[in-house]
Length: 257
Image (tube, rainbow, N blue to C red; front, side, top):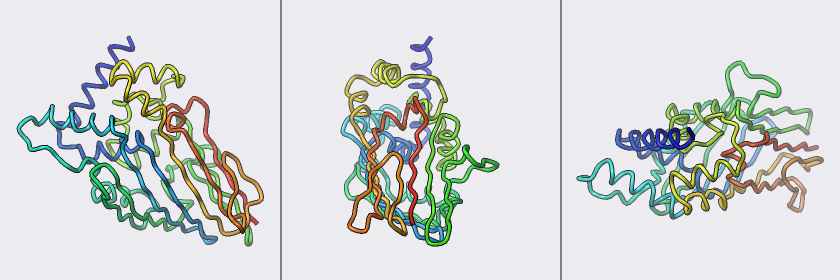
């Protein structure tokens, strides 16, 4: 049964690529790369992010092969991740004021993202409390920031980033999109059976690293560590596999004075 489902998902991925969606496909495949995020949160609730994401070599080769497979007469595309196209998609997401991404090489993008109100960033309509992706609360000069991901929230967040997000991540068989109750071991085994050992190993080894500067000294943190001379910087080092599978709910939180 799982083999039949994996073959169906591979067919979906190829079909999406053949419909001219390589740029959008690359956007969603940034979840299968190594990424670095540097963010700043202001007391009034606005924020900024500097994103740098790079596809791993085997994942880049997969996208190239899909492009050639579905468009054999088209000339090879040098750029795999299209920074401008990805920036335009992110700019349309809730709470985003602007996103200006560009390419430093064919498989690497970077650039700033400005957020007008953190409590509206990728806000899910009708979702409150524990069902929110991001919760931002301020109290005087202090406050609390919480980011929560589980198999219920994640597909909705991806849908806000791109209308095709659920389809693309489902084609990658990620429980973060499908909601399927797979363990990390089961997921890697499924990826290995469809895309090969090298892709599975890249996913297993990739990490998302983030630093966030808060408006004041951090008094408590969950899921990360505190650094910086003024103790207002939080650092997070997250295995990509944890984000794709969400075997357990992920919660990252910081309180500041």
